[in-house]
Amino acid sequence: MQASGPAPGQPSVPSATSHAALAVVAVMLLAALLVHELSAYSKRRSMPPGPFRWPLVGNILQVPQVHPWLMYSHWVRVYGDILYLDALGQHIIVINSAKVARELLDRRSSIYSGRPHLTMLGDLAGYDRMLLLQPYGDELRQQRRLISQTLSISTIGQYYDIQEAAARRLVLGVVDDPSSLEGQLKTSIASIIMLVTYGYTVTGAEDVFVERAIKVMENFTLAETPGTWLVDMIPQLKYLPSCMPGSTFLNTAKAWRKLLYTTNRMLYQWSKEHSENGTARVPNLCASILANAEGKATLQLEESLIWAAFTVLLGGLDTNIATILSFILAMLRFPDVQKKAQAEIDAVVGSERLPQISDRPSLPYIRSVIAEVYRWLPAGPLGAPHALDEDDVYDGVFLPKGSIVIPNVWHMLHDPDVYPEPDVFKPERYGGSDIEMKKVTDIAFGFGRRVCPGFHFAEGTIFSVVVTVLATCDIVPVVDDHGQEIIPDIRYPTRSVICPEDVKCTFRPRSGQAQSALIDSIASGL
Ligand code: HEM
Image 1 (cartoon, rainbow, N blue to C red):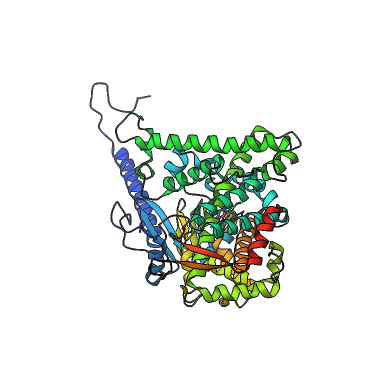
Image 2: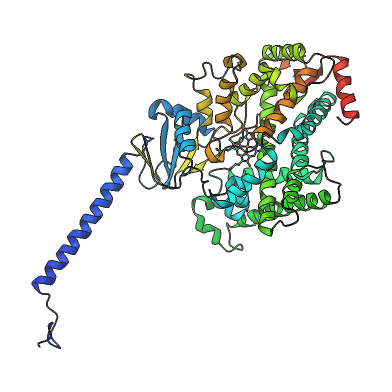
């Protein structure tokens, strides 16, 4: 048999058959490329509308840096309820209506429950172990289970006395020293959460655990601020040797990580030891979980508990502080609402005793005031971003896997078609209906499988502060050197949790009896 192919020493001459084969392969490759491009093009075309995308950089220059929720709300008129932005190739989907948020984040929560990956905050500063930043998966479910065992609606009542006592101490403290409002509020909220989570009693404004926790919170805020860290745009920078010029962010992140890891372990260890020897307040979250494990807690369970407990602390601090300052701001700017709220408390609770959290069902106007605070200045105007884990199609538009999905809570709660005169603080808009109020909390506390697990706990804290201050004091503006009242403006920095700035006021006791009731209650340890 004769061997095929060229004779030795002769150049290879392609036959007609191999020419044809090459041509077929080339055509197939071209066709595949064309199909890929066409499909990518048609996907791009069918993505949600949004501002014009520039080649390479996309919308990076248009992504608003200051109060982005306002610009997203403005864009609703142009692009509608769902809008698309491309930030250097990162898909961003902004949801501007409760209806779309319900459909995607609630009903399709099996694919919309991830969190975006943040290099500075997560990989470098170490916050990625916290429940808040966990991707959707087993560890997230485990940590959420640990929290809900202790802070569910059926167990939360065991902490009411802590919340009421802290509210009374806070109000009396501000009566004594109005300039200390913000500092006292931080200490007060931290003391509630630390007792409930670790059984730890805060010793005062200079408490070492409170100082550390607040520092960890501040570092979190700095690390997560969009546009601050180049490494979030170019993640490879995290591999820079730390001696290189321009790598100071690596040392910053290292210091933040150390503070985070030492603080959460110190608190956990304190709780474990002192709950065992009877010197911590029980029940508390850590002690209850360890007691349930009956001495067989695995290292993995303890690790999850360390992070879950610490997320409760960080998740509750800023959000509660911001909400209470927003309430005070509203009372200063809308004094008629304050009077009406006080009249309801006087009629229902009277002046013979201090109000309690158990009075909540009988105080619909107070419940409406609180719902209106959540709506008027939502602590998280953009909620927390979700990440989309699979390609999806909604209402004919294509939503690509890996998108960051931002619920524009601000617009959902300020849409004039849903809430006429949205900037006016008007608890009457709910007509006393808890169903209407729930429409607000269903948005302000997040969506789907990532909904805030601290909702019932927060409700108790906020209610006890609001009802205690209104029952016992008038919230009045401070006056300037000419005796003119200073009504604070509505100002807050751009953050994921927005806290109004410069809320200065006085808590003026409504009667000597009210002030004495506060003093007596604190003296008797109630
Ligand atoms: C007024 C007070 C509060 C507000 C407005 C608030 C709001 C929110 C929002 C909007 C989210 C994001 C939900 C989402 O991803 O869709 C969230 C998550 C979270 N909140 Fe709250 N929260 C408050 C208080 C608390 C408290 C007191 C705790 C303590 C238990 C807490 C713990 C958490 C945790 C652990 C998460 C992360 C959930 C997850 O990623 O799966 N929050 N909160």
